[in-house]
Each structure stands twice: as C-alpha cells, then as structure tokens.
Amino acid sequence: MERKLRVTPGRRPEVVVSAASAAGSPQFSAGENENPYEILGISSLDGFDQVKIAYKRKRKDAECSCNWEYLVKLERAYDMVMMDHLLNRKKGVAYGSIQVSKDIRFADYQPIVPWGPRYSRSTVKDLQINMAISAAFIMCISTLGHADWKPLQFLCFAYFYRILEKLKSTESPIAPIYNEYGEVEGRGVHMAKRVLRSLGLVIGSILAATLVSE
Image (cartoon, rainbow, N blue to C red):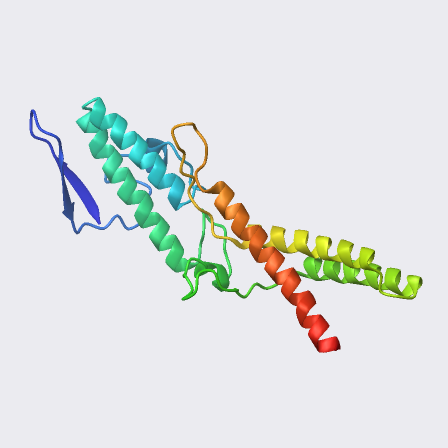
C-alpha cells in the first residue's frame, strides 16, 4: 500500500491511501534513487519497533517545520520499508539477508495464556551446563554422606539464576517507553515477574521431588 499526501495551502496535509504496491524495490520510482532507509535515518538491520519510532519522530519534525516535500518522501519511504519487511517475513528472512528457522518466523504469535509456560528448545550448551551443575552437587552430597541443606541451597540458587536468564532471553522484545524523567516505565514490573516465575519453578520442582520421594 502506498500513501500520498494532498497539500493544501494553510492546512495540514491529508494522507490518501492508494492500492499501489511498493513490491519491495529499493527505489521509489524511475528516476528517484533515494534510499528509504536513509530518509528514515535507520539501517536495514533495524526491527519494526525502531522503524516506527524513527518514522513518528521524523514525521512530527516535518509537520512542525511545515516541510511538506520531505513529508511526502517520508511517507513513501515508510511504505517502502514496511513492504520490504513484509516480503522478507513471508520469505523467512528476519533482517537483511539473515535466514531464520521456521520456529522464529512465528515467534510473535501470542499464546492463549500469556503468563503460562512456553516450550523452549534448549541448546546443547545449556544441557551441558545444567548436567555439570547437577553432577557437581550430586558428588558433593555423596561425599558428605547425607543430604546437607547447604548444597541444596547453592543448587537452588544456581538453577534460579539459570532460569532467570533463560526467561530474560526468551521474552519477546518490548519497545521502551520513557517517562518525563527519562526512565523506562515498567522495567521493575517485568523484572519482578521474571523473579516470581523463576522462584515458582524452582520451589515447585523441589516440592514435586519431595512428594515423589515420599
């Protein structure tokens, strides 16, 4: 979809949406060699959130300065970049020419229960680290001859930290929202949710193992 601006003297521009397709071409039309990424002030590796933030900021600046010619170019550049991202998404290309797996192509699908557990495939490195942690504490308990609480406490802390980092890496990226003091809103809330989920998983695993052993 391509949007056009209708400029009337003394009035703000009106955006007219037409059904012209950008087709993912790096040029606007014949004779125009301007790069849409340069007009928006972004790179081809930037994600959707960065594109929208840059577009809104430059659009606001252009409207304040009444630069209608640049505003027309900005609208067309934004349409070109969005069409390019859409075509790359359908092809399975995330950013630029970086191929991604089929699982990542649909990673933005929201589950029915947002706070519920999600399937996450562990890497070989994660499995090796977890097995090494478990083996170290099993050897410690076997050497002492009885299940002391101190190794169990260290084991719980190690798994808590591992789960906390895993949740942080698997969460979908959220565009930061800054308040009037320049601080990111909601960062503490997201961190508290991750801590509670990690504690719940660790404590729940210990309780389940205790009930099974009894």
